[in-house]
Image (cartoon, rainbow, N blue to C red; front, side):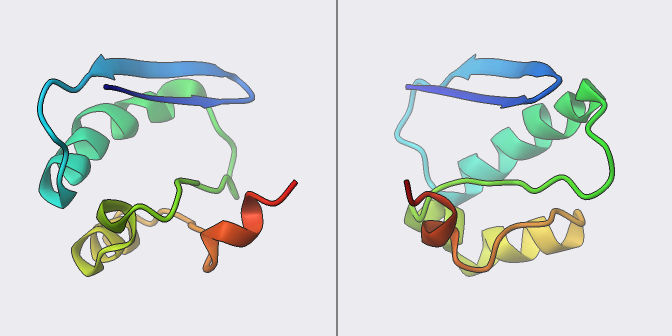
Length: 82
């Protein structure tokens, strides 16, 4: 599986995940890869989006995102409607 991030300014990091991912691994990936990708020069007010997978919406992940000051939509499913 691959994990990656991007913004209107361009791509961030792309990594290969060799194991089955759980919440702790997801948070480690965010810490090791998303935080350094902030160098994409995203301006204030950017919003972090991911889907409703349990590792994305678990209490520990929500708390990690809050402590890192990530702005995440309250109801992620509403942001993905076409």
